[in-house]
Structure formats: C-alpha cells, structure tokens
Image (cartoon, rainbow, N blue to C red; front, side, top):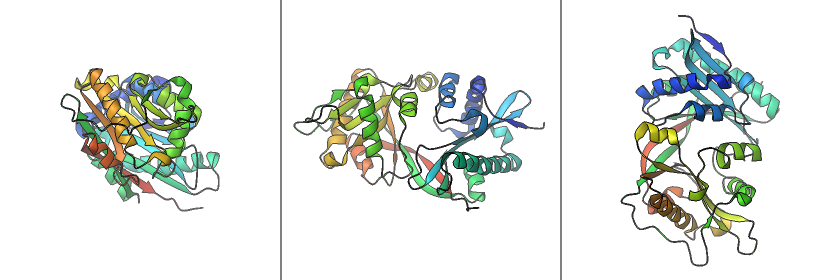
Length: 324
C-alpha cells in the first residue's frame, strides 16, 4: 500500500497513541502514552503542528510520526529536538530516508524562522532498544552525542535517606513560587549539555500546569534572606497511563536541581530523600528519574546515595548540518 504524509492535528492523538503502543510491543522502551498524554504534548506552545509535524498514513492507519521541536534559545547553538516513531511493519529504507529528508528540510525551516544565522544542531533521542531508528540516524551522518540513563528505586524497601543540612527546610511547592522555581531551573541547568531555558508558557504547559504534576510531592529550599528565591527543588510527576499499563505506581522526579551557592553540601540528596519518603507515604511503589551519565555536577552519585540504580539507557544522536 502506498503511504501518504501530512501534518498531524490534535484529533490524531488517539491514532498516535495506537502507533506508540504498536512500537512498544517490539521496542520495550517502558513508555506508555494515552491519547490525552499525546494531545497535551502536541498542544504545547513550542509545537508547530501545521509546519513541524509529519504523519505517515497507510490508508486510515497512522504508521509513522515525526516532530521537529524548536528550542527557546540559541546560546550559542540552536539544538533542535527531533522525535519519531515508526510502526514495526513499516520500518523500511524508504520510510527511513523520507523521515531523514523531512527532518533536514523542516529543521532548517524552523531554525530560520526562530534563530536565522545562529549555528544549528539536530538532536534525536532513542532508547537502547530502538535499534532501527538508531541505524537510520547513523547512516544519515548523525553521531552518538550523549548517553542518558533512567534510574529507579523501590520505595517498599527504601534505604535510610540522607537528611537536609542543618538550617535548611523542605518547603512544599506552592504556585506562588512557580516563576521562582522556573528561574531556579533555568539557572541550575544553564550549563547542562543539550539543555536550554524554558519559557514561562511552555513551563506551565509541560511542567507545573501539566495534568501529571504532583505539587504535593514537590519540594523547594528557599533563600532565608529572600523568601521568594528558590535555591533547590525537586518537582514531581505521576503518569497515570504508565500505572494503567504496568500496574506500578511510579513517582517521577522530573526536575532535581540546586543553585551553585549550595552545591556540595548534600542539599540535592537531602531534598530528594525527603521527597522519596513523602512518595512512599503517599503509596507509590517506586521512583524514577533520568540523568546524563556525564553530568558535570556528578548527579549519578547524588541519586545513588538515595538508593537509585541505573535501569536502562537513552542515546542522543546529533547532526551538525553544513551551512548554506
């Protein structure tokens, strides 16, 4: 059957959920998405549905998907994020070639609208089991740029947790601190590989305004002199679609960070430990997070002190297109 390509609409979210489910049967990434999850993702402020999404259709069945996502800044490089998923029955050379060409063409168009003249990089993440797309990217000249790991800890047998240093207190998240938490996140992650700033509208849509955000399991350390400044944070989510698919109530520590002034004092591990105890008391089975293995702040050690262990890997493939 001939395939047709067209941009997605929000009404395509159920078809996209079906596509992800079919791919998960083979790839076993551990990720499960509901139509509501994907509708929220497609409705994000930095998603241009009409000009930066592509759906591959076999008749009325969605069998492939691509997304080109602009970033908020280009300091000094605009690191466009790419996403894709292709049905196992349609992972052909022709589909791979079409996807790569669409990524190249559409990324340049997105880039020129957002940051004309700035350097450009294309970043595509893939789970360690997603071998087909890794091969497609590698043959197209993408190189392995970074390894991220998912880490998990069971909460039923949670080891003793490190305390916060004397004089510091875990303050429950409140929406009056929303923009202060955003400022702390942008400051903390400014030097992290592949990271750019969040804009307030994207932050509220994807993080603190998400249906999956758990403010009661999110905690802050505030500046004692300036009570409106966030010095450290753990922001938590719970993805109901994952629980429905696996039967496991998993707490996700989505954002963990400490400003430079407090680093090296055990603040991150103490605040995360406080969060894990709260998640355990709330009836969660385990906790998970994702981290760069080459994190400059030695975050793996912080998380290991709280009992987390590496579960699986994600790889980021990078292409630096030639100018002109």
